[in-house]
Image (cartoon, rainbow, N blue to C red):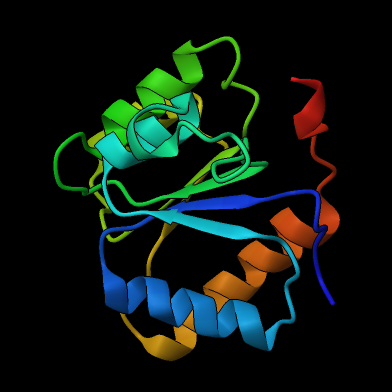
Length: 151
């Protein structure tokens, strides 16, 4: 088993197909971390700020890690990153961008807003599996994250 039950992962991904592939890989790796999903930037901000459908903190706990697609409907990933990293109570949450955009401007903007990693989402399924496995190994098994409860 990989991960930590006390550390949840928020996946902000609008593609059902990409999210289902991610979940299949996570299950094969026996990841035990709770996983929450938002399908657009507005929903993600509601989740993080406990507004709208996410007023119940038990149903929307502070994530330990955020895996974010950039190209989202409504408030896009760039704006979500900007808001997270400018908020004193949220900015210590690692934000990992997983996107198909290799646009140098996107990469620069994301790092300017202090993302922790920028990963290109491969189109090839075998490469996608390898990329997600590397994410799991690094972020859920190797890295030591701050205690989410102490924030």
